[in-house]
Image 1 (cartoon, rainbow, N blue to C red):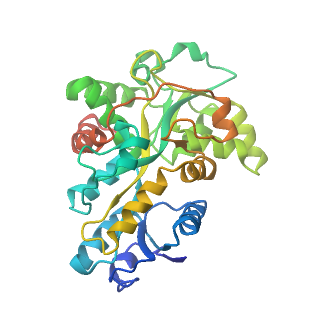
Image 2: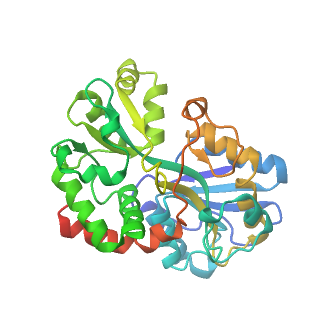
Length: 341
């Protein structure tokens, strides 16, 4: 496996072609915005099963999109892999993906995880959960995302900034369920209830609850699992102080986002690219997603990480993930109007 990583913001778009653009029967060129070491197990397992070697070019989503555009018809890219429906939608809008019809993907993946035109697919799930301090907060006070805007929690909510794609997709889901006006009222309520100006990443929000700086926080579930499994005593102690809530169990279910991928327009190794997407829906790949980054598999019946198993089953929002991207521009406008920094 050949892996090329770009750390500098402009490197991924200035360096010459990393791989040959001619089609080879035993090769796949993957442009990936996922930066998890465990993903290398995916590529190795795919090669062992198919004999197809995987060449990996890593960068952030915007870098990879710009690179594919600059490479044009000569691009060697076969598949683009990234996280969050908002980023997949941005790539879609730039014409990066081509439609795929696959009986395997139609059978294996839930409809909510498939773009209506087959442009991209979700292969792992990440729930955006609510966290509370076990020592000084009664979790029965909150059961839904909508509750975060309740005036009783004024000065008590920690959450990331509006430029965070996870929050943009959460608000996009609120637009889908409540309309633009209802979503804006909710966003204004959350701003009014913030314990501090948005700062830091998801882990910082969880630590804010553990330290007592805020009563409630919002973060993707796997950041919490990382703290629980950390080699650092302070991390594990912080996690033990915090409880997790999967919201809206009496209604639509908890908001979930995805790690997903699509076949690049003009892919020189298209057949291999489709085989790779189909492989990502296999039990082998789904278990690697679940154990490597503590993500939820999208295929039912796949073994999950023990911590995730201990939480039992919970209801997930079955909104088609493409709607999260379609609503992204309006979500950003709403954030601006309500002053969510």
